[in-house]
Image 1: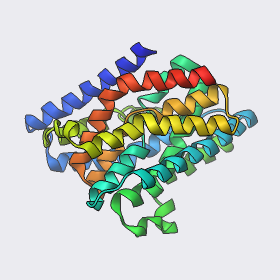
Image 2 (image 1 turned 90 degrees about the horizontal axis):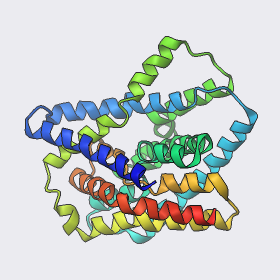
Image 3 (image 1 turned 180 degrees about the horizontal axis):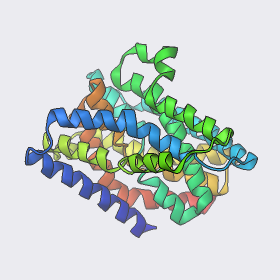
Image 4 (image 1 turned 45 degrees about the vertical axis):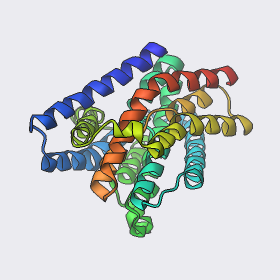
Length: 305
């Protein structure tokens, strides 16, 4: 497990390094990075959600997914509440990024490989459910939080966005067993393949524009990352245990929660006017520290599952 976590973190850091070098070499520009951000958020994210739901319909799978959806939402609400309680700043722009980064974890690239290795197919299924609900929350409350604009909680803005549209299309395909031609599936597969590298390149670009040592000097950044990597996963573990969740479902959710700060923190900050430099610091710091925190939290979850 430690080797798996270590490998995933190293891959992320190498991809970020490529973006960093590309920015320093002037290969990546501010305009190009903005375009890449739009591609990742508007095109790639829906493709990832739709692809995860292209599978044969099963009543048992649907029940398991529904349970995972509800528990994921419960955990997300818990983290939102804790962030509002524990994270404050006179600078509201920084406060929004600190809260956003502490709530939303890199539950795709970092978590799914671990869920597959440790828990098998069932773990991957629950991990996919977490990602789907994650996108539902991040494209609704998340956009409102990072932008500070109440217009994003209006019904029209809430449901008409790439993440929600991708989710609705995917559910229709899954429930009604809509046949997907190979040519369409292959196209989705190719687009989904850039779900991880593209955001990492974007982070690398922003990292090149900032002083990474700031992450180790900023007490608020360190505290927010500490909440994300240690406090929230253990709080979620305690809540799920108290309500009777056990086994594969419990461990799978905790793996997702314990991942480092999501790359979407930087992309949303860039797109919706958040503190991009702070978001880069949070992603970079949490990615490095997760090398030690993820195995610890996952081990505790397995002990009580």
